[in-house]
Length: 282
Image (spheres, rainbow, N blue to C red):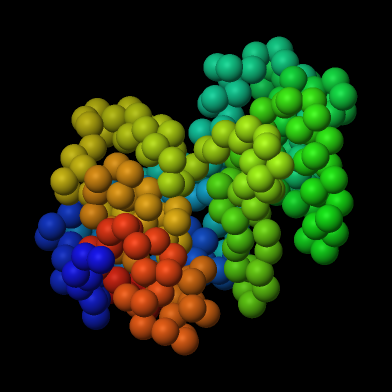
């Protein structure tokens, strides 16, 4: 376990970083409303001319997520651009599954993911692959297990557009697409993931950075900020950049009962964290 520096405010380290890759759910908002202190951080980073890239494991294109952010009063002027796992999934399908048939495993609200893609939605029996975006019914988990076993019998690849296992929506917990993808692997199926902590999201993000700013991102001057050890912080480890871990997000219940070091040892002994805060504050 590496030494971790507790920050009373992120302003103490901003001279060390020019680029900030910041998670949305659990850091900037809770699925219902924005965190006041996190918005102040964005405002101050902008005043200091820092590059801010929001990254999310949302199984929808960035422009759909932007509409939601606008509804909860997160101004687009507070960040440079947004990348979602949905963007990365969509880009992969364009390249690998042109004119193929697919089965959508997920709620109707995620249908924006495959709009304008040259693929055809169909049944499991006629599909060439499965596009998994999440659960429609959080209470009937066993029904999904039966469905996954049926998909396995057809030897279909499952594309997971959100690697998250669980998310907190306000005070409620919900399973995500990553939960189904892992179960599919348990049944012997093949899942391919798009989003944090996998490099495909960061590579996509860096390409967008190059296109927007006409220069490559300097990873030595880049900080990842997130609340999920197994996606945000592991993702930072995977691309060898420094990270700031927010305790008050997805793992908050664990940190109420134990200290940070003991929890980290249980979750992932090899994970590296550079800084941490209870909440993202300036």
